[in-house]
Image (cartoon, rainbow, N blue to C red; front, side, top):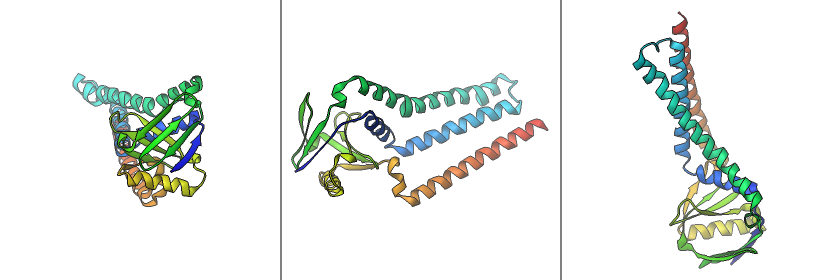
Length: 215
């Protein structure tokens, strides 16, 4: 059995929810690139001076601009506003800030604080997400719910590794988080290279449109 405890902070909640949202990091990278591209398309169309025709105006400027605003708002809301709302709720609700104690065995997880005590078997979880600071245990039925365990809760690195090995032994899917990306230098290099190529192509397209418009 592994025993550990911690006092949740609002920073724990912010990091946990961001790690959960970013667990499908490929989707977020794609979304960010599409958002940037649409913004450049809208600006390029505005500078080109070819928006007199209503069809061109809608196709080249208004539609990309609307989609850009929608995607940008979604990114802002999901990654910044929602975690801050949760942090504000934590400050107001003592139950969310109450010290919690975990007792983990091969059969179940028991977590308790001064308000409640819950026993959960391993079949209730479908996967775990690991970042540099936290483990997230994602439920099987309601996949939008999870338990988080900050790594500072463990008394030693051996306890932390024992907990992780227990998660793996229970056949929980290990969903890598982009917040753990610095442990993968090759992946960092590939992503930076792709981003540089994308930015270069967008900048080249923008400058071409701009200089053509002033000729």
